[in-house]
Image (tube, rainbow, N blue to C red; front, top):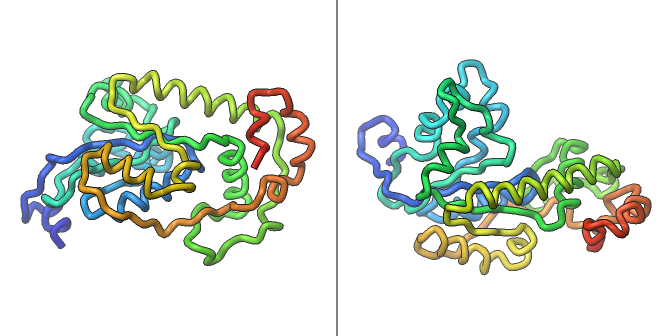
Length: 253
């Protein structure tokens, strides 16, 4: 009720909160992390507000006036209880420039007050596989074991060249992100650590954002917990071809 009243101009909101961005690629646990953080009464996390779908909509404000769009969709006025506000930004999103030649990345770079949570998945093969399975099953998130997909229906054959290209591209994105935001407060978070010890990682994030610490919860669960050899039809061949490369460790569960 209070949020709606602020949006309608019936109540005054406040913008004195920490602003942050979760920068990542797909299939690294960004939905899970956002769900955890949104369970905090003082944190708001928006989704991929600069996704290709949003930008390509007819008359898209995200494309024409990205900064105004950001202030309207994410960094707007909120009730006094809100301590931190953020949104998800994939490496490839928001790269377009408006009529003045400015992209949202340029705007974020210029505002050193904005904090960066750089979310990665150390095993990039798992991200690549998860994306292939999601396209195969049309299932992108999961809550508990409800409607969980059977292992045999997820089993995928992966192309060596596409895997290698994805590994190289993801590592380049990660390096470029660190260089680009080197002047910002940045916190590195991995999916593996978040899954293994969520309380420790979430406490670190809450401290980074300067919010009052809480015990957080998420309704998301791991979609593909099986071993790689169970999910990749050509696992043995792929593992052999990547032997001796910088990515051979991705094949160890």
